Picture 1 (cartoon, helix red, strand yellow):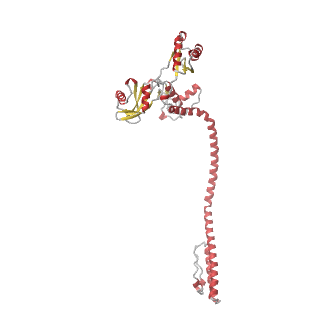
Picture 2 (cartoon, one colour; picture 1 turned 90 degrees about the vertical axis):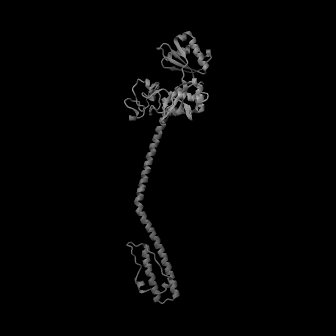
Picture 3 (tube, rainbow, N blue to C red; picture 1 turned 180 degrees about the vertical axis):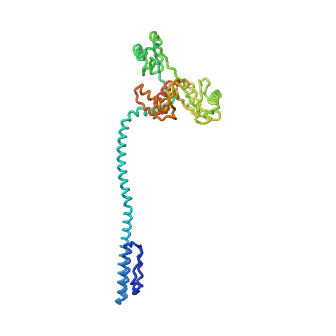
Length: 408
């Protein structure tokens, strides 16, 4: 857009030359704007006005007044023409952007539609999860609550269950028959004991849980002291394991005797007769091993309170070792791989014929699956048998704790 330059009033008062009258503002644009058109016309009008005033011999003072008004009018016209040109340029820009705007508008409509569909799917998923929540919560919450229970109840505060085991000497006698006979033959009120629970066991036995160790001793004496009951049943207290601790990242070159001797000599209060066995486990750290020590309950609690033990120039971390007996070949509990007579199964899906790295099946815990079928439970099974959150593993760990002698 060109700019119109109006001469000074001194030069305007002079009569325009012949060239000024004949020449107008030259417009080189192929599409002149409104401002350019107005500038061309007003320039010609101004020169003709000057010529007319000069030819009419109008006094200089009057001529100046007329020209000042004309110049003001021309300036106002030019300003309006410039505003019109600016508006036209904006309109052209908007028209050029119109297709892009329409495309964005269509995309917004499509996104709103997609969002509505996703909202409906989310609502359906939420309703399905609400229906499935009670079943899933029965297993997942139990697993997490058990882990939290282990953290809340340290070994030194765990109370032992006072249980006595009663088995029929006749192998054909069922657990139900043993239970009914004991309920008729014994009266807890006469021997002054409290019974917490009576549960049936496999192989024709029952477990009787009393409220105190004295109650357990009394019921054992009552059964074994009764000639008729003694000839039919065998009553005994369950054998309990000694507690174990695991000591981490000891140099793998250390032998068993050297380990035990160093442990006793550098840590006050540990006696050789209180350590019953120890064995090594592999560590993920190269050149290191973990030592598992089975000890007297008193020594076990003493070591746990220390949290670390001295060993030559080092201090090693330790904690309670809770690992139920399990076979990593058959992926079941109750025996180890050296005693296994079963075919190898995949820990991922429980099937035979392949190992976990080669497994393409969905995860399915064989232990939780068998437990559900046997006891009509609904534990979660979509995990590997080696999963640390497995309900069966937590159950076996719970049994392991109850069968451990913490000296309490």
